[in-house]
Length: 119
Length: 112
Image 1 (cartoon, chains in turn green, red):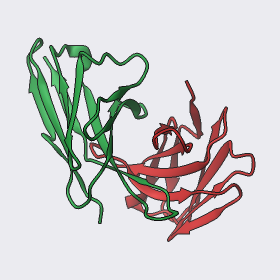
Image 2 (tube, chains in turn cyan, purple):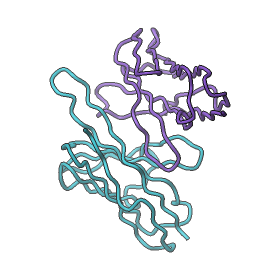
Image 3 (cartoon, rainbow over the protein chains, first blue to last red):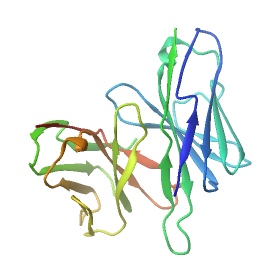
């Protein structure tokens, strides 16, 4: 199997506080993890690509100082939304890339998402 | 940036009907993927396509990788209520750290 978990599944916080979201690959090692944001009735937008042991690569328009990403091990990546504001309220989804083996393409497996509401 | 357009945007069908949706891109992709997302959940991979012209089935689902590499379609045969959800296509190119570009989504509603 290839299971990816996220914690918490939902969080409500006050404006100005920071929130940490964890993404774990439970039964495989993922050298690369991805963080997406999804607004209601919209598609998934890639925020950043995270490689174990190195700095994350952020997509254009995503503030790296606001969305801190740490990929400390082959099974864990964290996204911290710093000084959250109501406009940061969204559904945050991570994915982990599992190696496809010799001659096979890697496959991304998605977590169940974390709904963040900033009051 | 790149954008994948899906059509239709939404569809209401009766149980038992067949469904067809497609995805078009302004640029070429080497891999096309189809995902289904249930409300409040992450996307789940349905079908992956790796070669232009490839036709792949997964149960009642069939998807094809367009010859031009700029489009793909997904068919669902004999729809059932649990097919309800949002279907996303996604494109990927090699050499881009496996980054996916998602389509705009097709929302499917199935009535009994």
